[in-house]
Length: 131
Image (cartoon, rainbow, N blue to C red; front, side, top):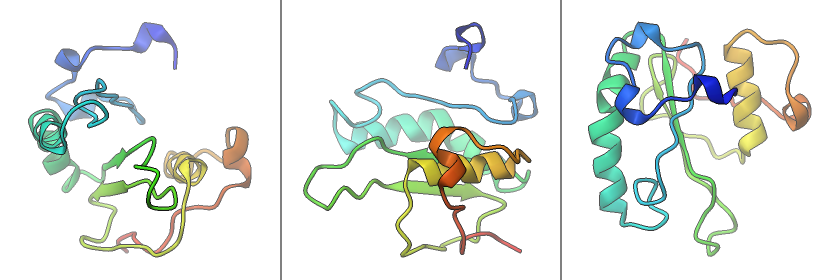
């Protein structure tokens, strides 16, 4: 992503139709629960992305919340939540996916047929999509 397109969280739109097809929101190390409590991260998520999450449920949009690491005690299981109209509410998957699988899935949802780097050999996330 070119740095010229980067924005601060205060610039996150309230008219979500103005968002590009794919956007990344990266909180700071406190808000992402790395250096602060889960409660701090939950509050940040609620205050900054709840309105978008609510909108995504009715506008064929997808919010992906993923972590970059685990606590090193659970076999490197990294939580990832997919939320929005295309996802069957309450669905879960016992399949192990990685960040490349998430990228490949997002590329596919965006209509891309060529995949970046290791996403080319990754698998799509399945079993959670609403029909």
